[in-house]
Image (tube, rainbow, N blue to C red; front, top):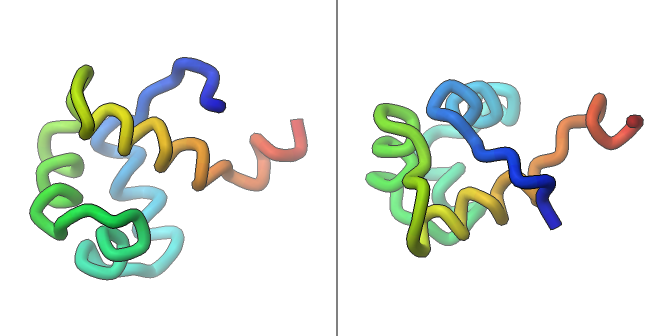
Length: 70
């Protein structure tokens, strides 16, 4: 489970860029629409609702190697 940290808009784009994925490919990976990824990159992940849960799941799924080593 996540540690309560939330993804910020810059985090989404940085992770997607690191994976070298388009917004569409990134969206497909996590079962959301491309428009959702675009919104997250422009406005951040919402603080409540199903989008927040998806963001938390994304954070759990995309642990950076540096975090995993800690």
